[in-house]
Length: 120
Image 1: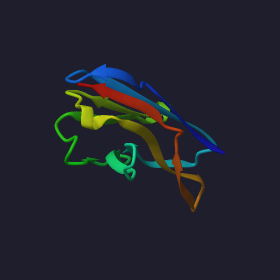
Image 2: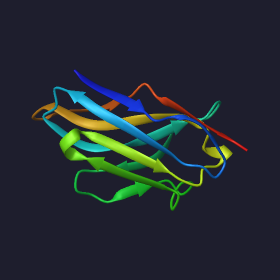
Image 3: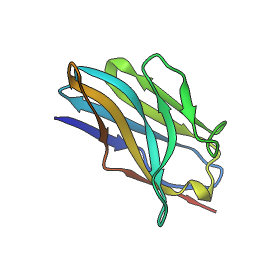
Image 4: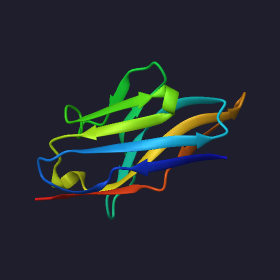
């Protein structure tokens, strides 16, 4: 069983910053990609940023140059530093991980989500 637990969401004024964290725990043979998606009311879930083990980060155009994704492999934790926040960034942010619980058995996992609200 693999679990993802997010923290760090909240209410912030436009132009402010927040840092999201996500800890992956459970039976993990290997942890490959990790990242963040978000879903605003009435919208589809969309990619925010992803990071593969030893790879380069991938950002959506809407957050590039404002958000930074990083991970601590020793702690199985992924972070999202969000700066210069805009009201359009308001959404539920979901942590994502692609992990193998045994050799050859890989699947995607999702956290429960954390609300980020940016006021104008």
